[in-house]
Length: 77
Image (cartoon, one colour):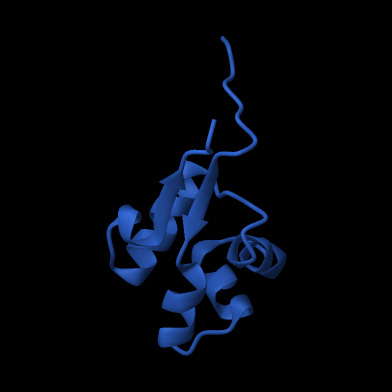
């Protein structure tokens, strides 16, 4: 199995915006979706792309489509 890695590609997210609109702390959101507060922190900063399962759990929790939370951005090459 080969892996494709392009360091210029990224996943943008709107987790912070959805969390703040619902007046949730990072700890509250983390507990609700079964991860650590640190995971939410680094995801909101754009330093972590969640697993597909976590992305779906977050979308389900917020009641939105996964594409409302996450956007793939291809690097300029």
